[in-house]
Image 1 (cartoon, rainbow, N blue to C red):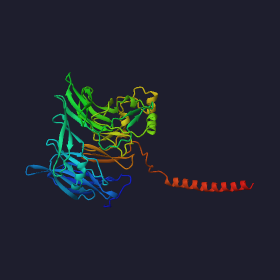
Image 2 (cartoon, helix red, strand yellow):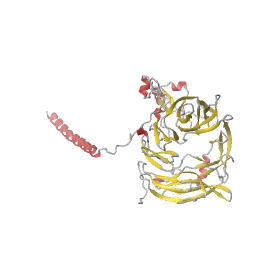
Image 3 (cartoon, rainbow, N blue to C red):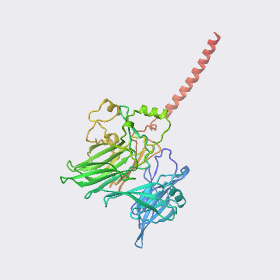
Image 4 (cartoon, rainbow, N blue to C red):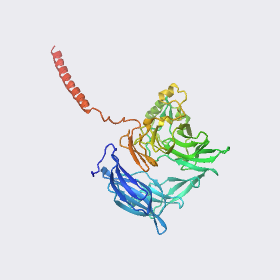
Length: 490
């Protein structure tokens, strides 16, 4: 059946766009999975990326950007196409100068939340702006001091670049190589990750049980790199590096003995969770790192004194620069995962208030949710009174496996490859899509429905109670007035 598109105030009903490897784009309705429309964009192309490019005001529709590569006469060229998200019709099509497949998203801007991007060719040192021609000039003005990075797993190295904008729109942007980090000879990169540059962080402090605070290290220009090598005894080991992507400075490193890749990693806000294989125990293990600012005077302040300073002192601003980084304090812990996994992601809400869950795709093609509070490096062996007040769980090296935490329940997502999460307009709700050969879609509420009424809520009882209170107030008001009149006559 066909129905007109309409605005969902909660953001639960969505249109899922699925692009196949042969170039067929499907639009699925999230409520029941029915196909709204399907378009074939050719079998001669390979596709690099697809994202929501523009959202029209008053909810009149969206435009989707599609970057594809086409081989013609032995040459490979890239093409940028914008597609109507409601009908699948191609609106614009533009040939690009570069045939690279590295797409870097830019900050959405303007009333239509236009999200442009950069198509970066690291080998040639060039970049193209992926946007409408009339918007390119404004975007170029905002690309001052823009830095990008690239991790080359074949060369086992990471590199950082600065983008030099050009006044002429006809010319490609140039990249200047600022630094290069190469792992030691014989090592190989088995995993890397970086935080979402556009994520919303609700609170930048963590209040402890003794009323002191830890200040989160939320530098978005942080790169996690895991390298595997052979130890002195012949057993493998994994070394983890934290780099600043602007300067290339090594912020922190740690080595896990008897460990090998591949390493799956999620990097969210100020914490990192990564999985590797323990060769001695023959099991999967997960390690967590939380990054905080190591400023003794700042960390020793209580929350009340910090709020007092905010109220009594004039507004003060401080500049944070990668060229003058803050001292870093890293808290870490490792846990044993009783089930094997092949993919991993993290939930993220619209404002960042909802508790996070790490979603893992198991080898049995199911999705399991691990609460972030279980992956806390500060879990004590013997909790003190302050730890109990903070809500810390006693440490146990084995992560519990609870059947009710399987998001897919008894279903299997055949050929599970990736798990994706999307925020809704309700802070408590998060949409999850797991896909492979099968597609599984559901709505998660890690902190329960704290901003919504239950489905079985009795609205009639609420209305009756309010009317009863109004009638009672009216009757009592009349009696009070009569008593006042009698008292005055006496």
